[in-house]
Image 1 (cartoon, helix red, strand yellow):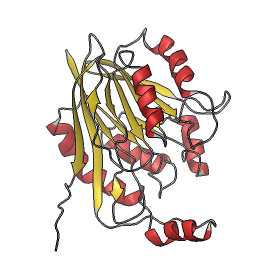
Image 2: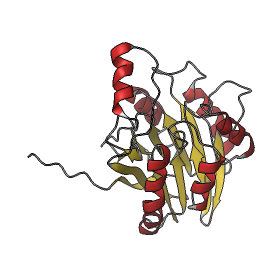
Image 3: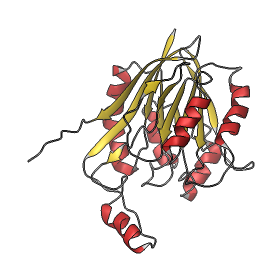
Image 4: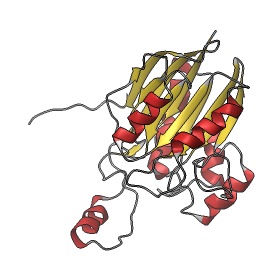
Length: 266
């Protein structure tokens, strides 16, 4: 038996949420999705995911929301983590950090484990994502062979190293965080489906979803700037995985970008 997994990449603010609201039902139908997972760490105006955004996503049929380094940027997000086990934060934050790093979802075709880890290259020096995931897999693998990991990281090499290390041990590894979709989706030799970065669901007339002026000034002046969600050219980025429930191996992958870019020279 095969299970169909739909993942939507980093949702940025209201423009991203509106895009998900518009496209997700059709995508779930097109891919006959058994489980839908989204990265929502930027869903609340570009910072965090509060109860408001979580409720909207769960009402659309999302089963699990993954996070990242911006998960704690709003105090409402922090409160939400304490009460909603389906809204995750990276598992490899230090012991005692509140919130869940993985969740085992029930579907009509069996259990799916969803894990969230964060890279350390060019990011906070937290616990090792490799060893933390290894520890968690000892517990998770006894419940299900279908294991999905959102690796929230900056460096492509770290994401690739992680996926190669866990090839055959987990079903899927998707990279998030850079907001730039890569075109390297593949299935590794031992059956792990992979992409380095799923990309952003949000406004592309922007710098990683934010208005360009503030982002440019941050680099020009090296001072803090107030980021404001951009609005133009909103796109949705995602991934589809078909996984064999008996082996836990991915047998099909497809990269999603909606609406498709049209490139023209005037």
